[in-house]
Image 1 (spheres, rainbow, N blue to C red):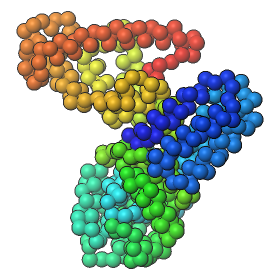
Image 2 (cartoon, rainbow, N blue to C red):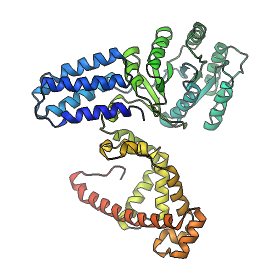
Image 3 (spheres, rainbow, N blue to C red):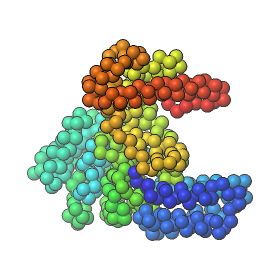
Image 4 (cartoon, rainbow, N blue to C red):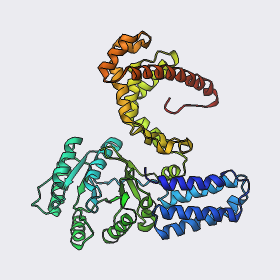
Length: 447
């Protein structure tokens, strides 16, 4: 995950000041020296770091902190607020044209993941905003770019407009907009050509498409892994084309996060979306406050709850709660739960959204083996209907049959049976606690 090194450094630094009953100016100075180093190491633009440190220092030695009853906590609050401001303050919404279709130009250098991001954005528009987008193949120079977009369209079951690679991109854009009006598509996503570096010819063509299509948004797609280069590219595109927002790809990779923290300040244009993986649903709206929370180890429960709400069937959740209470939870229910949780994304990423997860020993190196989960599913699927309802009936010969049918070992079958029993006991305790806690307003997430 991006920001890992930065997050560790900042969390260690703020931990030292967290519980202090008194915070002196020299405490703040020492802390800001650490913060400055951490940001520079994360490849954040030097001027951005300088401004950030100045703002935090001024507020941290001001009246609101020094006269507070919990100065240590106040300093952390200041750091979080300024980190949020640095990344844009509030989430920046996508434009909606008063006269559909809303036109979005996707621009960027070759290799940043522009075509895939166009597909991901179309998918998000349909799933989250209930829109009906048209994808436009206007990159006639890169071999296989048109084919790639058409393949994405097929995967998503979405229309792709293409006139091949012998028609000018300006003409393609013009005809695509007409087609979208005829077919009542409410968004048009134009996948434009990229180059390996910024050149005059590329910019001229993009300016022509902009002039003709009069887009509501011009999204620059940049690779977060390229650090400061991403910021320079964003600056150059913005100066020449006037972008309206940035989509950062590969933020789930081994990136130091400097681009995400610098782009907004340097270009004064918001980060609109972030790519968090390879899959076509791995594009998320960018929330500055939630990202600041994650960097400072405060978790990101809102995103976790949103993921749960999008993927967990509410009726099934109520049914499950009833079953847990009456201890009638079976292996079929367990299988169903596994499927719903897997839809939410990689489990290690989900766990990192929990507040305080960074403090759990070994959490940073946690690698959840998805293969192991597939084994569990295979074992359950190899049980008979009766065995799933009454695991107590699974004797030695049945265990052998289940192990053979699932391609696992008897030891793995034993381990799962034991874990299932323990989990049922724990769930019973949790639902009991929840019943008591209801009077006090206590509630488990997702229950």
